[in-house]
Amino acid sequence: MTAPMVVFGFILLLLLGVSALFSAAETALTRASRGRMHQMERDGDPAAKRVNKLLSDQETMIGAVLLGYNLINILSSAVATEFITQSIPGAWGVAVATVVMTALVLVFAEVLPKTIAISRADDVARTLSGPMLLTVKVFGPVIFTIQWIVRQMLRPFGINLSMEADVLAAHEEIRGAVEYHHSEGLVESRDRRMLGGVLDLADMDVSQVMVHRKSIAMLDADLSPRELVRQALDAPHTRLPLYRHEAENIIGMLHAKDLLRALAAADGDIDALDIASILREAWFIPETTNLKEQLNAFLKARTHFALVVDEYGALQGLVTLEDILEEIVGDIEDEYDSALQGIRRQPDGSVNVDGSITIRDLNRAMEWDLPDDDAVTVAGLVIHEAQTIPEPGQTFIFHHHRFQILRRQRNQITALRVSAPLEETEESAG
Image (cartoon, rainbow, N blue to C red; front, side):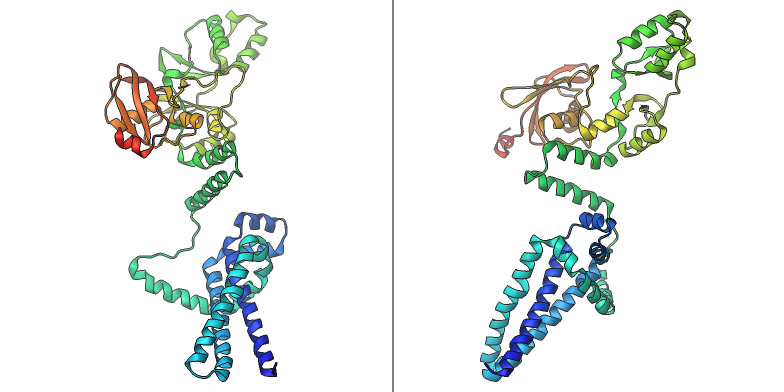
């Protein structure tokens, strides 16, 4: 083997090696887990810190890596062509150089390094973060100029290349990762619902989880102390609104612990109780308050109970800290709670449901995906879709389910049968 051939082989090997590093760095840095890198930086890992610095300006990083990668590949192709055409002159030499370099670049500068980078993205990104940071500094001015030219070319088409963080995109990325790992069997259904529930809090209003005013356990403040105590003990809750004359006129909240302290102070003399003196002020919130804001408000105020009113101040329902937490962890039941009623499974896979059952409760119970953007309850969903109040016996098909009206009381749908998800052929036939 002649000396020129040895030198050529060494130069070509060196150039392919550098090209492979650029190729691996591009793949690893774009696939590295930003969450894991952030945590490792907080733990004092300098390599993770360099990775985060590169990812903070991803456009410049990718531009610098691609510039280096293309420069090396063009240089290696030129060197190979120059050497081979000395032995094989003319077009045949160029053709041979093209075939040889295509094979070498494809195998050793593309497939091999990128395969390694895909399988060990975080480790490769941390290892190559130092050289890539140096590359970005060297090529920075050139990349800035290229970026300016690209933006000017795309501006007439209305394309904005802003790299500002998008909170919604971040939430969707987290949700997509959870859904993907759930489909792979790595995240349990319960954990998937909990993580999804956390992300949904900012998109839901208290009106979607509140107890409707018809279902609120209230006490009449005009009752005798003895009767109030009896009804408070019979109620399944420890916090009860008190009204005077009409249910809309809430004058305060009675807490069972305050009632117990008052009884102890009165030596058990119920008739001597002054209920008005132990009432707490009622907290009213608008029905448009989202759950994330209300959760923070509950924690800040160190209270667990709020009454929900509409824009006219009319009472719509009540919401508790437990209601919000149940959107994350599912139903929380104690010895005074009853299991969720109103959902009765049928042998054919359908369910008979009360019209007042919320769509979210039905979705959780059956692992369905009925939309709850335009209605809170199952009856509300049917009325919204049908654009009328259906009669018993009527059947509707929408959102891949068949809804049959079983009972109606005045203008309220009280019972329905909802089928299991339908196949496309069944929907068409329906």
